[in-house]
Image 1 (tube, rainbow, N blue to C red):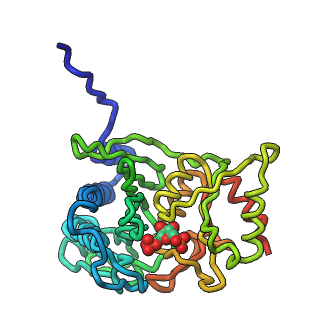
Image 2: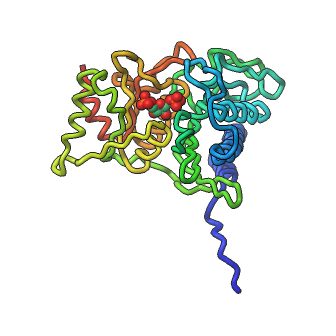
Length: 339
Ligand code: AHM
């Protein structure tokens, strides 16, 4: 019997991040190490997400988070895993989490020397856990501005998205994937459960310049501004003659919605509504990381008027309207939204 062929072309996340170091003079490996820490937390979260229907980890934890939403037990688990790996790693001086009121300063000898702080939404789309729909983790890595050797502080967290050194997400779907961007590119890794490793499956991801998918919550249609409504109507009126017909796809789980559009081409929108002019999504945990990934991949991201990455945050949990996707679809949207 001949032994099965092993495909040595497939790089694991660890192998890939180490290889990337070779291209960067004077690299310390801190960012690579941080990304591998996040990959480890993701694997632990994945195990629990996969058995959510089986064990008593499913359901409300009986608490309400700082956004006033019910906290699921898995949210807490994911939050603790991410905080734990980053606290014990060598690259992170502190974290901000959608689940926590305030940022956390690690304040120990190694952490104070670290270059980065990390902001994350540990389990986005968690209202979908109960119904077995894809959910995700989103993270943003900022180069700190405070003095090295000292504990990090609020200024490190309240930086524009342009200051991100990396950003990414994990989608717990039909397979589990980690996608992350640095300025060098966007790469996707699929978890091979047989060896417990993220393996490079989607190298150098680029947003298709055109797409046919638009993703928006139609239930809010009459609460959107007139220009946004007009753009949605234009999407519905597309024909083969002008790039259509379009398809509407909205899971209600941002990581899954944006991941699909990144691969297939499309536009994702969470506009402000009359009830919530700033929309629902958080600038630091959701909009900034996806805007960074979009731009590195050749797509765009705005709040309807400004580039997301240029917005100066004023508080940790601030929200923003959010539009992101394929370049040409975003340009058509921008024409509708021009004052
Ligand atoms: P969550 O963190 O409470 O799950 O909320 C975030 C999610 C996003 O993943 C998704 O895009 C959005 O909420 C959907 O909101 P809506 O149901 O209002 O369309």
